[in-house]
Amino acid sequence: MKKYILLTLVLTVIVIGPFAYQKWSEAKRLQHIRETKQLASQIQATPLTDYLHQLKQVSPDGTPLLLFTGNTQAQLEPCGCFIGQSGGLPRRAKAIARIRETGFSPLLVDLGGIQPSQPQSMKPSSSASVNLPTDNEVHSRDQHRVQTTLTAMKMMGYDAFFLLLQRLKLFRIRELTYLSNF
Image (cartoon, rainbow, N blue to C red; front, side, top):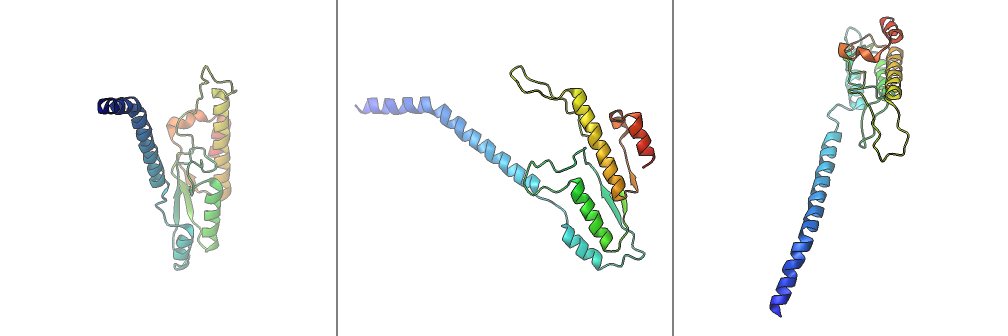
């Protein structure tokens, strides 16, 4: 009788073991992803309120202030992939306005990365029944977002920006004319 109980126990472990291990390893993988996202979401910067407090302790007369921005990647708002994310053009405009309220007239320079980091082509799968945008529609949307970013930068009073030459194919002649008038 003990042999049968032991045999039943061993067979149960053999049958259930792989499923239990798979569930355990998946839980570990998801935990690792959560921890990585948590680490990535930590903002390693001075909060705007602290920065404004530091600026108030310095006289704006004769003190040059140079503000660098960059790597927008045609994202007008934060992507929202984690809570507490910084960024977005409206936040940038508010920060610049708040800095100007302290009496400083910063020199604004964008270091590039306005364009999307990579083409966002979407290939429909054979089982997809949803109408996905075509490459031309995605490209047109990217052009519009870049144009909107440039318009916002002009409204914020940017003094200079760098455009990566390998990304110029995103623009049409009309946009390049706009850039030359920036």
